[in-house]
Image (cartoon, rainbow over all chains, first blue to last red; front, top):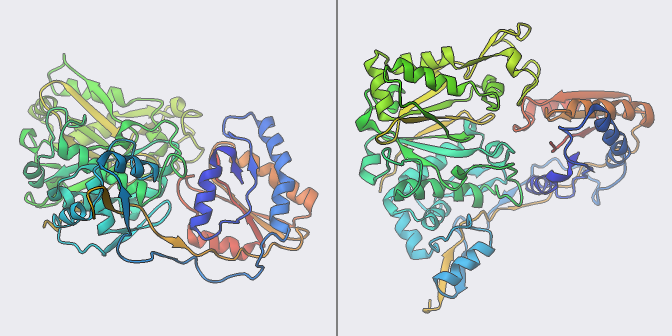
Length: 425
Length: 97
């Protein structure tokens, strides 16, 4: 059962599961916005084809196979491909092959890939996992090829590898976050001394590109998801709009200007350990507060901005997904001066970023019983918190001078994932 | 490599999936047990209510097993699939919005 708009995704998924001829009944798209009588009409028109797909002999080989779909690469090392032409021609060929994000890339020559590999201590043929949705085998060499294309320097490679390993954690749910209509993009937060060493910025304009390490590390992860995971807009990727974080989104915590211990120390890592935290996020919601200076006043404006009917995090919070809050240094300083430590900030947000059931019901991604056990839905005045518990808030200090902070809700089922940055070559 | 040729390392997945044989279609729906997996998107339940009723009334299906996914974004858990496999002769799932 497939609506028209999902035919490509359904075909790609069936193929990767080893069932390219799986019978599919295509119906009009969309179903979600139709009236009850329209839905019934589509269903009535489809039922005979569904029955036929189940009961007619459609399989050329009728033996029921007990084996699982097997998949193999021809070799542990990536294939090489000769391109006749210069840098510009090579870029055109790579684009035609579907291997770029539309921006120019550095062609991943053997010499450049080899140099990238020297930035970390892992063997090129090592397999890090299989990446959903198309279950591509993620080898260190292929990650290196994508990092070259993104423009990374070899010393960035351990950060790229850690980001890829984070995304491969089951809790990240990369298959769904890469394909969803919700348009989520992986946002990488770097903590620890490696950020300063590599120039991964947590300061001025840290979300906005023009910083080589931020732009290229974020882009490398996206190219891996595209080329190895197989989430491309003409196939499995179904973002309604997406947002530019799908090109690249990586920044460091501005630990030097934080009034508190860094995020990774709060989470129990040693101060001299470096980590990445990757979360599939729906976008960056900006909050300006240039008048209030009491700390308390800044927090009030922040939580007011979070009472946002169209942000589906309230309808998805039961999945335990995180919320990133990135305070600019000036806001953070004022909040700390008002007596808030990290825990108190998170608890304030949890207590006040709430909306009543009556406002959220039958809007956004409302689904009956989703809040079961968390909120009494029979009470229209019951308040739904933006996250399941205060520990689901990832609080970081980021940005330069000025009075603009932001928050980024996780998407759907992505729990976020953290990895220690190892393998520094 | 001469000056006009660039040799690149393939950055994309090279996995090849061996096709599986499809399970044989059942001879007839008459008396069969059919599982319907609801992807939990808005209106999926309404759509499948109609399908379920018609499979029973017009096609002689004996029993319908329903399962509603926790989220459209996550696969049906393997243990649920096994349970549906044991409890039914055929299944229908959806990729849709």
